[in-house]
Image (cartoon, rainbow, N blue to C red):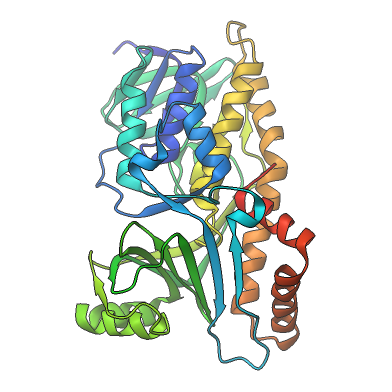
Length: 387
C-alpha cells in the first residue's frame, strides 16, 4: 500500500484536538486530523476570559453568548467542620473592571462550534480512525493508522488524552498520580437560581461546585472519595437530590436532577517537556489535573494558542521545520505548565490536608485574598490564566 503524506497530523477528537487541528490548518500546512469515534461529551467547561478571547480571535466561537453563560462571580464557602476554617470569600468580576471572569459552555456546543470552523478549511482532512503506532525519522514520522493505512508527516500533534499513544511512542516522560477521589457530574434544576456565580462548597475530600448554566439550571462537579460517590449514585435520583440540597446548605431550595449523574476517576499527569523531535503535545496528552480552579481546558487552549504562535514564527516551507518548531513550542509552554500544575496541586492538597498547620495556612491565605487588594488581583490573574 502506498504511503500518503501530510504536512501535519493532529491526533485526538476532543476539544483540544479540534482546536489544534484548526490552528495548524490555518497556518497553511496540509493537515490531517485523526478522530476516533466516541460518544459526545456531556460535560461543561468553564472558560476564563483569555480563553474565550482566543476562541473568538481564532474563529472557533464567534459569539460566546449564543452558546454559553457568563461567570461574573466566584464564591468559596468552607463547609468543613475543622477547627480552623477559612472565611467565605467572594470574587466579583466588576471589582477587576471585567464584564465577566469567563463563560460556562456545554462541551457539546463547543464541539459543534469547533466543527463548523474545521469544516471551512479546505486544507484540513478528517479521518475517523485511531493511531496505532509510529516511528520517528530524521525528517518526520511514519504513522500506522487503525484503519490499516499509513501516513507520513513532518509535524505530529498529540491531543489524544491521558493515555496518549503519541506521548508514549515518542518517548516523552510522563508522571501520573491517581487519586482516591473521583468527580461526580450532572446538571441540576434549582428552585432558586445562582445567577452568574460559580459557588464552591469546600469539604474535606474536595469541593462541591455549582456552575451557572442559565435560568435555574446549574452544572454540578462534586469531588469526593470514589466509594462515597458510588454509594450516593446507587442510592437513586431522589436520594441524590436530597443529598445535593444538604451539601449546598439549602441555599437554593428544592433541587432536581436534570441529567443522569456520571462518575469520572481523577489523576494528575505532567510531562517534563511538551515538544521535541517534531512532536508536540496539547491538552491532556501533556497535563491533567483534578477539576480545581477551572484549569483543564483553559490550559489546553493556551497550549493551542502557543502552538499557533510557534507555527506563525516558523518557516514552514523549510525542510525539517518541525523539529525547531516543536522545541520552540516546548519553550513557550514550560513556565505556564509548571506554574499552573503547581497551583492546582497546592490547592487540591491544601483542601485535603488533615495537618493542622496546613489548614491554618490555607485559611490564612483566603483571609489575605479577602482583605488585601493586590493579592486579590494576583489571584484574579492566576485563576484566569493571564500571562
